Length: 149
Image (cartoon, rainbow, N blue to C red):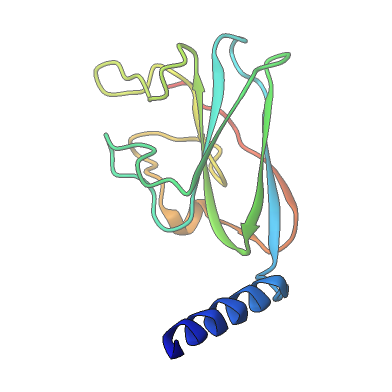
């Protein structure tokens, strides 16, 4: 009998506490826009990273979030909602064949790619999280340049 009373009391306490709203960590939205796509084939995939950039050949595996968006007039936009404040890197892929991965020729990507804070990407300009990351403290809109190598 005592056990059932204790269980009931714990259940009621949990129910009561769950009905209160506690202040949550501030969240923001990050809108990412790309322009100047070479065509309107496929989709644009927006990957968001909060810790480190992917290891080559393992793109998108450690992403914080991924959004996909249609292309209109050689442009595309996606908005990441409810992001905790912090530093993020945006990695964009013009996925012309909609297979969700970066298709490569011998070495270089065959589809367009872009990275926040980078105007160009090349084997000699390897992306680093510190340089590519952007601070998101409030709602923010950024434009990422797409590079076709």
